[in-house]
Length: 199
Image (cartoon, rainbow, N blue to C red; front, top):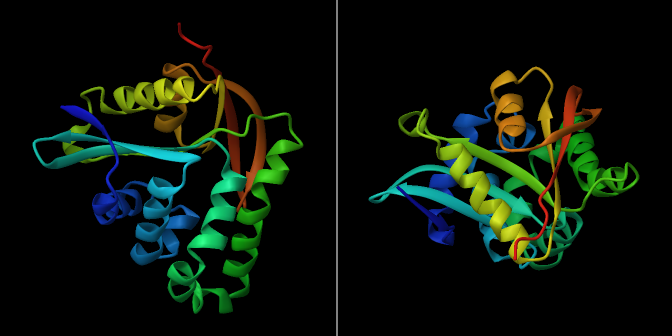
């Protein structure tokens, strides 16, 4: 198994993996076209990055980080607006979806008021054939190492409080419970990990 920095041409594979692995998430509800465009933006934005775990050419899992989610959103709005707009325009006619999109855009400022780091683990999914092999831990470690390389020593993650496997994973790799918030009507745990800077 190899851990590699994400290539944009794998965005479609990662999008399908995201939707199958986080099927109840708001981002997944926006459709494969939107999610593909999102991972393309993550790979192109200098403040964000994504790793994939591969065996031969098969993607076993991925992890995505942003050093500053506010800057990622600005990048999307400024540089990718016309890529995203057609994929979400019709859905924005639904008031509930519109409110959730606005809540997502306001999320970075909400987090900054809670004394939380800008850097965030955005998503991690392991395909069924990769589970039980330590793929999630390896991906997370690769992301942590990249954060350290960029001079980042604190990272947060948000996870549904009732998602026991994900909560266990984050605790296992070093995240500590910080607080709880409501996100899109779901009670979520906020965790923070103190990475330190390796010499």
